[in-house]
Amino acid sequence: MRRSLSKKEIVKRKPEIDRIFKTGRHFPCHGLKLIVSQNQLDVDRIVVIPVRHYGNAVQRNRIRRQIKEIWRTEKPRMIPGYDFAFVVYPGKVHDYAFQKEQILSLCDKAGVFYQS
Image (cartoon, rainbow, N blue to C red; front, side, top):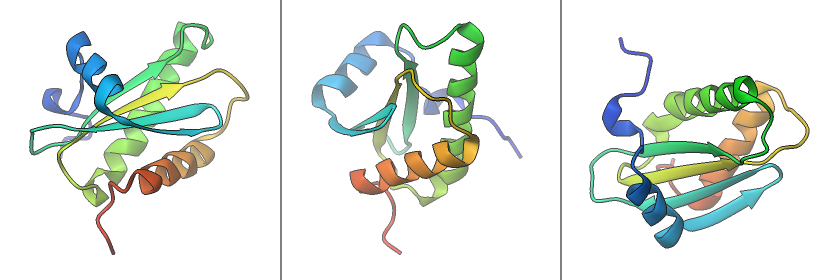
């Protein structure tokens, strides 16, 4: 079983990221902002963007890996057809459990989970 994201699940191109920011709905919380935009695909896609002054390269890559892992484990609960942009701001460093709780609450606000 593959435990990483496939290439079609990651947004890489600048025009696609710009479209997410322009057409997406914004859901902020402390230290993190979620922007959700519909796409015309049958998969959800993600991009994690730490702001410019978010620590050094090690810290930026670590937060990217953490958020992508949380998203990967929770994506079976999500309705397909959305692009997600997570913008991470500097501040107090939180543990994995707090990050997961924060991301799940933002996704719930955005209404991207299947109704249970």
